[in-house]
Length: 465
Image (cartoon, rainbow, N blue to C red):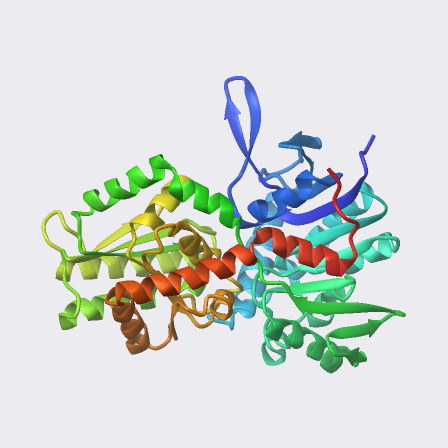
């Protein structure tokens, strides 16, 4: 018998990773921004999370983990190839990120995307109690709100897009543009990272569908859909406590020693993704070394590039280009035992990341386009000593909040170089002032505020417990 919940989260992935041990299958909570963001909300509600468990083929039976009921949705190998790697990550992802890489349009991918969204909508309709609140997440499931409304008009439906939403001119390239827009308009509330994205959305509803709008509210089918900005954040207290731990502080000191105790450590932490601007960042660092503005071993860069979507062609090509550039810089400017760039193509747990944040004098975050970028916020929260400096792309959602970072245009090599040099040489008192102001903002705008503000605007019942 299906257990029905008054609050349902629907996302592409369940917040778990599977471990196969000698005693059988086990599950553990996986790291990630969405998991961190929603766990406090789910823990105090009668909640179910609907999503893919990560395997191929049949889904496991629903189960509980860390106080959350999990309802797996199955994906086949074809679904993963066409819905996930195809439509989601080779069509929608690049288009929504300013077409940094040209999107590929494929009718079979669109068909698979539609079919998988139907499956998620069916699962959500099954587990939602009467008049429940359902919160759908991100670009992989943009058709679910309308599909779910058709099945369960009693539900209160919210949708949050974690990535940018494109301007009309780009969105109009999408062959299934009407279907996606109508899918999103099935929600009562559509949330975006920035106000401009919400404005793009309601303008598109008027332009493409001729719908009447008032401000950021659209009239559709005798009801309204509201769009607004709800910038996502991090669990600031958790990061501060982690960074303050003796283990992380000791590891931070050890990292600097392993790097040869340089005067300046520059850190980049990104998924290996073409939107993150890793190549342009490396080029800027290489030019500063070539000009003699920076030198090795006084200054070293650590670039963590977490593996991502490695079966997608764009990502395979990016890895080759990044590793070639790292090799060129190290060949030109490194010394025996002292590379200029320490390149780490692997994943790290939160403790190791916190230690890297604490060890770095400058964090460089230069995406070409990013909905928010939580790494920038994590770095600021981790600097409990109010040391360090943040170089941040203007084209991140975080740039509108972390205004005391050293902002730059990642497409402008001289601008990136200038921001990096200013961050390295900032007066200590000025650097602490900048960091203190950013930390103050983050403490007042943490992940709990993000979730509470969205759910309050949606009209979800208050949590109990």
